[in-house]
Image (cartoon, rainbow, N blue to C red; front, side, top):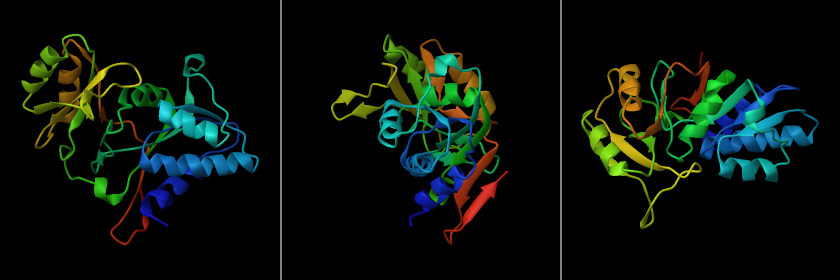
Length: 221
């Protein structure tokens, strides 16, 4: 069994009867959703809230009942992946392009679980670029403003075209060497006109499930 599957299936153990469950996006969240689907087929009663269109398709395939987020004022538990995490359980997300929906769902979640294998671990955030979702209008201007924060900005592409999110926006990947003050940076990014949301998920995770160099489960609380 690969580490992503081990981690995803471990996270699924926290899902209980009657919960509203945020379903994350990405290669590790995939395994959590597959396990939750198995539990549903064995009698678990839950309702899921997908963080992306791709996750919605997977949930349908697994016969997980879904509910519209517009009808909710809270979510009991969300299980989602990360592109990088630090020892404080701060993470960078958005490599799959779903960061806006992921953050909206995270903001409603009572118990937020991040799942990521050991390769995503970093002493200080910044190894992975910070994805920033921006409006298509004047996105080049927004990009230049982001660059003034001390990063190299690259527009995310989908083959020869600009990548388009589920919300019909673009993503600018902001490459920083080290992010010493992520809370301050998140505020600075969101102050720039044209920015919809950034991929810094800070002080949100109640639990982080990962593996060590031996492939054993490690849980940060």
